[in-house]
Image (cartoon, rainbow, N blue to C red; front, top):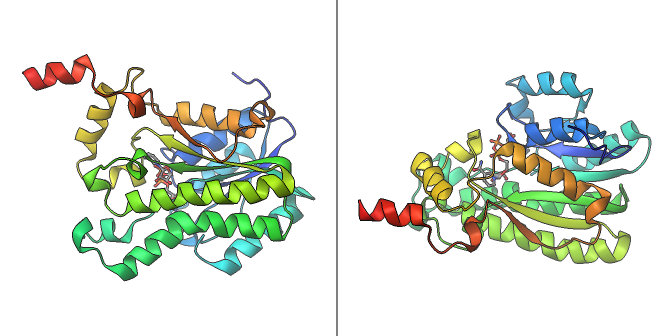
Length: 270
Ligand SMILES: NC(=O)c1ccc[n+]([C@@H]2O[C@H](COP(=O)([O-])OP(=O)(O)OC[C@H]3O[C@@H](n4cnc5c(N)ncnc54)[C@H](O)[C@@H]3O)[C@@H](O)[C@H]2O)c1
């Protein structure tokens, strides 16, 4: 069902890899709500070709961009302004990558070279995109930027590895830049801390199946799905949330504030 919440709005969506991606599902939802969208992903991810199917469905163009490359980010913002014929209203940062996880390194033995790359791609990329958007004055007044994060930034989930540190940095960038962009142009910047979700990035976490079942049992409303997440992001891009900024917003069925549930106690007593 469409409420027309994003009618007339334009934005860039990073990170749609395949139909399970949170960004993919969010792009479909934003389109349903009336938005005009530009899709972007790393050139290497695009070789899979899946993103073309999404672009066709929602009448979007695709502009390749490796978020760790200054020139790519500069071109993305410049070309987006050109395509939209002016400024735009929202950006979804749905990007994450851990080299140490990929290489099977334990948290206590990470490679610092890989770690720098992880932080660059997963966290400082938000800064790079925002800085470029500010420099080119690309966002409209009361624009909205959302980045996706996970509660491992606040609490220990041992197998989340260096991504816990990456998410803590990402949330901090959202807060700090949110201040400056708020003052300058009323642009709001928030992170959404999503339940574990079965996607390519999600399933890269060791023991993911046990992890997602545990979160389900620990959430009074159950885990939030990618579709639920897309709905929430639509509200954050809409004009109904104009005074929400610099927040880390938990979207997790109540997991973050639950100490224990009867379902977990029953499991322990078995
Ligand atoms: N799946 C979960 O359980 C979960 C939970 C909370 C938060 N998140 C976060 O949601 C976001 C989206 O992940 P997802 O679960 O939809 O998985 P996904 O694998 O579908 O998306 C991750 C995206 O990051 C892109 N990416 C990686 N390196 C890049 C680069 N250098 N330049 C540009 N793009 C690059 C990938 O191509 C991919 O499209 C991530 O930030 C992830 O950490 C996921």
